[in-house]
Length: 184
Image (cartoon, rainbow, N blue to C red; front, side, top):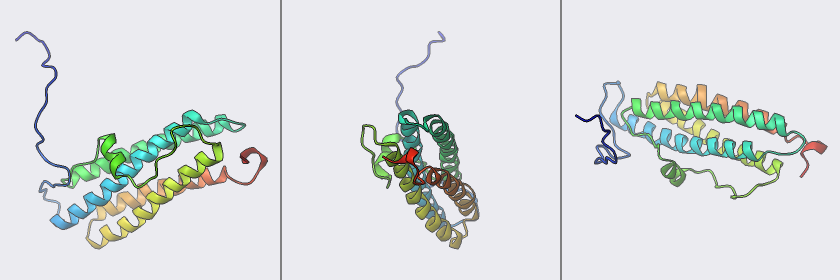
């Protein structure tokens, strides 16, 4: 043994996206499959929202630059924590979490922003619309997984995704109150 790292390794795929391992969780295969599908949608959208927060955090400007710069970074950190919680829930159900940013971009339902810089109110509005997309889906998913007996997924969606999203929406919306500082 030379101690040389074995570089440039590639492996074969051992389990495909959209499949499940059987775990003794007391949930049916169909319930776990449905929950994983809904969680992966929330995960892709949340990954996209995280990236959107970081983009707008970097591009923020104007009289409220400092406050919004810090707020958007704080929100991004909270979204990143949700990304981890959602992915780990998918894995704990025996599923495969969407982890590749390119895959997440393919399945997200959040519209892509322009590559350039928008006016500050438009950036905040875009974040609010992304939150609403996630919240509408999370409310529906939480209700449906509850009927399937998946209390863990319901709890994650309600206590973390929905509550975090609602609080962040409130903070963003208050920055769009019609005052001279936010008129475009």
